[in-house]
Image (cartoon, rainbow, N blue to C red; front, side, top):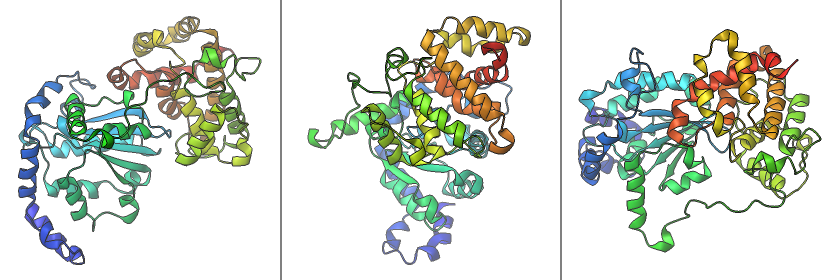
Length: 429
């Protein structure tokens, strides 16, 4: 299969100067790769004992139980993050790769209408669990425009000569636009610019490998370490507790400045924008606006005139709170809320929300009432209560442990949808 693929690609690669090198058999590359990674084999199986995220009778249970594909909240720019863990792939004879492809598509189908980011952890791909080159070729072709259009970036973590060569071999098949979205990440610390690493469930063997290659470098070349928390700036708006923000630039109701201004702008200019909250914004602009807010500068969103930028700023503000609006205290209640009878849901939620700090309740009510206005125009903006819940659920509640959050995304989103569906019973008309 591998040699046939190389022959098929020969004509397209004639213009490349190192064609002879690329004609090395894929099997030889993979043997070389597996020798470098042989130490990982004994460690991988110990990580696959995690609980399955689907019921045993779900058609994708056998694939999902390996936790090869996971959803990890949003990245730093408001885009949903999908993880693919090569080290969790079992030996080929134990895994149906066709089913794996369908499960990946099934997962992406829930998010492809919005901008999303894909992170691929390459470490742990061995001779025993590698898919064939033919399968990779078919997989790329299976992912049609609807999957490729809104993927904003594909990050390949710990790339090797093998993976770089494979992408070179596939160059004739990969569109120029998609090729520009591929990024190589050499160390886990580099992911900090992309996503909060604490929200990722990174396999232990991947972390250990990262530490190993860092230790082999000279100190001057080890790159930046994970940032340590520092005291908030005098005017800081992002990453500080709501209790502190209620004393800083809040209005008479106690709504934080960033929420006031983004919601006001979106009410005026964004309610009829299709895909509001589903699109990413310019990365440089997002960072610039955050820095301006944190330094106490006046931010005029009307001057910027970018609805998607304001939407991302709002989501980023919520996601960077030290503790979620719904608080860690309510985590178990939210995750287990599906056990509450429909007739009692509104009253139970009211009781739960009474336990929130005043500033949390005020901010939550303000946000939900705004999202209800967004949903009221869903025929135009395509954001009904379920779509909004998928976007905002992970920004309203997360667990102290990233693994807990991943397994609870469905229940959290469902709780958020009920907040929207029954807002008048919960918060008043």
